[in-house]
Picture 1: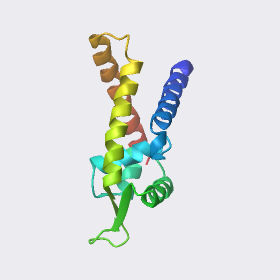
Picture 2 (picture 1 turned 90 degrees about the vertical axis):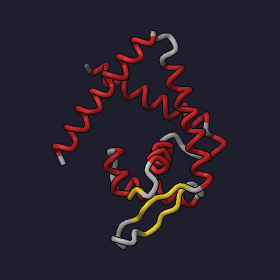
Picture 3 (picture 1 turned 60 degrees about the vertical axis):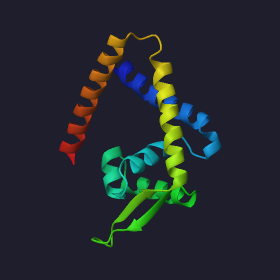
Picture 4 (picture 1 turned 45 degrees about the vertical axis):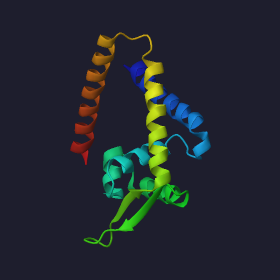
Length: 143
């Protein structure tokens, strides 16, 4: 099982490098793409909600959002109902990046599964969804 976890980690790291290379012109690093995806798919989401969704520390989200805001990809606005909460919205630049990120992610998936049958792809999806559900449950139970 140790090899399995090593492989999962190496696939994730490889995907991050792939995205970083493909999106070099945008000035994004490989890990920032998940933050742009999270904001664009959930306009008006709070930084806390993104931290929970991505299983990262709140300070990581705050730091990345500050960088993405400075680069013009997102804007942070104070919540009207809770002045301590910052809500995140994508800019036009962020929406353009979102489209490119989705294209690169689709390319990565296609390359990874190029020699898979449709049945193997469906089974892989089913099993990874099951792994994710288990991981999410375990993490939620511990917090």
